[in-house]
Length: 255
Length: 293
Image 1 (cartoon, chains in turn red, orange):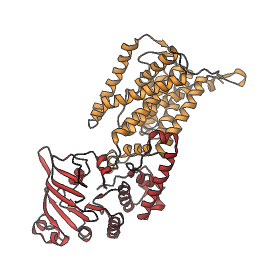
Image 2: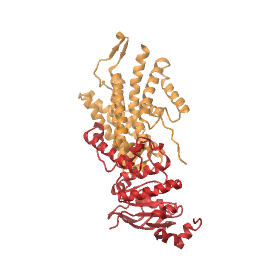
Image 3: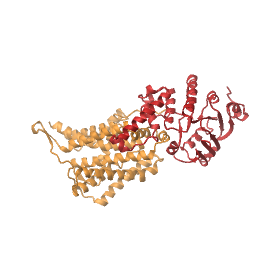
Image 4: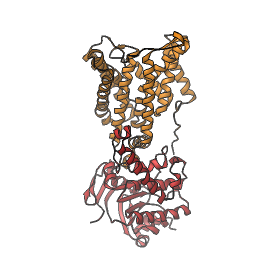
């Protein structure tokens, strides 16, 4: 059974069909890419997968469980985490606390335990700190734990977003334009990070990206969207030779 | 000596404003709405303490705990019934609804408990503090009020900074969408915020009425507005800001009553607010927010 099975997913806003007949199968431990011109519906697809938008048709199954139209917090608990196109960290909180917020669903103690500083509070907090630091270490950021998130340079903010998403212990990680605004060196480093995350955490990753070198270099299967519909799917090589894709997407400024 | 006595009374009144302002500021920070019914929750808390303690004769601490429970329930119910259905609506609709809830509570109280003033007996049964050989006398109510507010404020800041629900509150306050995607139940956090704010309002009600012992259905209205001013004054959304704003407001109000004019004291309070907002529009401790374009 595949990790994620999306069938015939669609959504319309008023009269505009933003995404239609979207199919996707995701297997654990693989890297997937979602590309397409601006406005093709990539982020909309992500928003449906994470429960931000309720699809008008179709269904989404994660590990065989139907999660279509469920709330974002339910889906987060079920095992899908994401990052954002525009960085959406909790700027005023410490780096460490940002990661700990990601663990929200995994760690439980009540408000009263927190107020009264019971043992369960102290043990859980201790546990969370340890796990958060371990995660930060994977990204070489353990020495930044005490800084406020907004004090980090851009590249590290992107990494912290991935780190925060991983804190929820997901089965599937969605990255929305992880390389946006990065210079070639940072992009190169990010490619290695993404691969490392996939290997170390043994999860599936689906990413949206405009940087073709990045997508072609890292993704094992690429889906191309145009006007909300899938026009091609396959390996990087297949995609870059597909005449429809070239016409729709690479045609203008093929580099 | 006179001055110190006015100052002490000002700080005490300010502590009550601070407790109420905490409710305003937390709800604003997290739900991004102004809950104008908050002042009337104080009044309800006051009536609960009145009936259980002043009339019923139970222990004042127990009475306050009962009032806190009742106000918590009231706060959660108001949020669930009146505000939650408007989660996606414009802030103007929510504001008008809050004003509606405020009138509902005031008139409900008038129906239930009639509009004749009830005279409240102080929940504090201690002797006043006498200093400088009797020249300066500070009432026990003032001292208890100040101590209680300081303790509550410290616990609250600690709760928000160092516990998981506190972190969730901060996260929801900064970016509701992102917080939701981290698995935080946003509605639950908003309910919790209303619960905390309303419980504090009950404490504020009991303390306020111990110093100013007339209880009528509109008792909460004016302190509510003042506390709102205090929250804006200190920087709405900021917990230490609400506290600082409350204390300063109480001091300014009492000193202008003493040295300028009893009738003009409210005018002075609001004048100070206007000046502060002209100089520092985000309030004393408010953060400057920059919007990324």
